[in-house]
Each structure stands twice: as structure tokens, then as C-alpha cells.
Image (cartoon, rainbow, N blue to C red; front, side, top):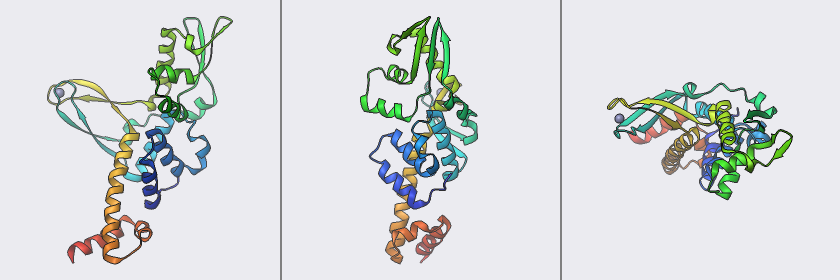
Length: 245
Ligand SMILES: [Zn+2]
């Protein structure tokens, strides 16, 4: 992984502002994995998210703190966990290279896992049934006996089986955290999305960085690039000087 500098990160955040979350993820990953630029968009969503988790570890560490509201009583819960708690061990190298197969109710289905290209197509066409849209993108071939079927002809039961197989193979694509409310003991599974989480952190970081550059440039007259190239410690020491003078 290429370590992202403050200047690179600020640039990614700035151009990502006007883009979809799928694009935001690709922007971060293209910068962090420059050798894999060609394949990032075709990566299954779980693999993308696994890479985003690694980027997050490198940028902000392994500890995550998130908030959740109890669905039953509305109590606010603070969730503290580590990136390793939600990092599934999936062997993507094996899965991406091979087409996935499933046999349900005499239907033979060949399929692949959804990727960023599919999500971008979904965002662009906004179909009423997002699941059916993704399924159609990801189904390579369906046969029943010797007859080849269109993916739109898939019976409900088979479509559901394919989707649950996808979730089973790529658990990283939809992370859920088991929660128990301390106030009412309600148990539930809360979804956790590394992409929106990381982007929120990046936004807070960028705003802080702009503020630091503003203060240091105003006082010392240094150019933005010189300030961004400093280590966080060096910036902090100068900011302390300004505060104490
Ligand atoms: Zn509760």
C-alpha cells in the first residue's frame, strides 16, 4: 500500500466531494493502491471494503468508535471495536478468478460477485428494484436442463438463493455488528459501512487540516504545500507556539 500524504489526502477529499460514494471509494483506493488501478473497479465490494479497512488502519489506526440508536427504546449506544473485529478472512484471489456456481430447483446458475462498476451502473440508472438490477448484472448464465434462460426469467426462489450465496461468499460486503442495548436488553444487528465511516473521518480530518494550514500560513507566511509536508507533530508544535505566544 502506498502511504497517503496529507496533500494527497486533501486532494482526494476535495475532488470526492462532488462524487458518489462508489467513486469516493475508488478515488481513495486508486491513490492507495496505484499498482492495482486497472482492477479496483472490478473487485467484489467486500474486497473493496477490506482494502478500505486497511487504508483506514494506516490513516487513523485500528480503533473504531461509532454510535447506534437502540431500535426498541431509542437509547444511544457508543460502540468501540477494532478493525480486526470486522475484517473477514475471505480469499478473493480464488473467487475472482473462478466463476461461481449454484444449483437450485434444477436451475444451474453461473454468477459473479457485485463490484464497483455494477454499483455505478445502479447509481446511474436508479431502477425501482435495485436487487434485481444487480442480480441481472452479476448472472453470467442460467440453464434449466438443456434450456438457457435469461436472468430476468429466474424464479424468485433461485434469485434469493443466489443472493444469499453472494452474501455467504463475500461477508465483508455487508458487515453487521451484534448489539445489546444496556437499557432494555434488546438484541439486534447493526450494519456498519466502512466507506461512509471513513469518508466522515476524512471530512473531519480535512476540515481540521485546512484550519491548521490557515493558522500557520497566517502567522508564518509558509505556503500550503510546506505546511502539509510537515509531520503532524511538527505542525502541532508550531500551533502550540502560536497559542502560547
Ligand atoms: Zn434499548
